[in-house]
Image (cartoon, rainbow, N blue to C red; front, side, top):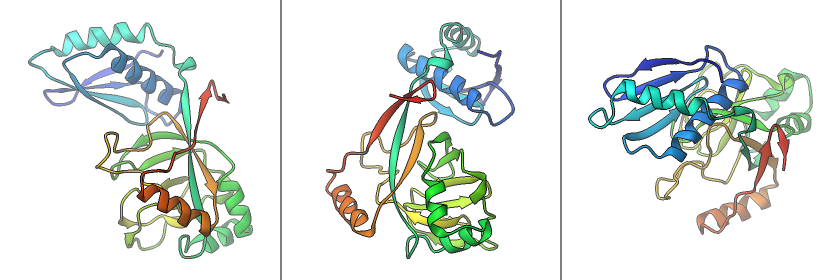
Length: 245
């Protein structure tokens, strides 16, 4: 593990910063520390929030001093090994094009390929989930094939439906909620990435991977019904050391 910087975030927050770049290796270190803190179950630690390159630890300063927490984090960092941290690949079914993907044609035209090739490329890789933000459960993903990178819309839409899958520059993502947005929409998933009624309201987790799986309109409607009945089982597989298990 690299030597991180420890920064104060107000009176009850500590930022453990591992670097200043977007790098999967930094995500592995952030994830390893967060997992270690969860295993340690320190009473004074209220919440941990991962980002691209750091971990925010929210704690109770009446129970734990900043310097004591820093020593505890340093102790944990000596014990963890980010290279062996296992992750999950979460499969997100997507119905591409048509009403759900009004910008698929524009993305294909910009890339100089067919719409079918855009779908093939977009669903060909496992995307690392760098962090969640913007809205609850919105994943910032790394790994979009460069061939289909595409500029944002000149003017954002005032309302993007929940579940929409979009591309903006070299990033791709999924809108968990209906919000304004300027990403180019290429499809939609029937899954709910954020459901406040559930014990675990956010479907995805930073440090895991996401894989888009193309489905037909009929499959979309079938899965949508299962999701509404809480009977749909999300497909997941383990990934250790960059390999599927």
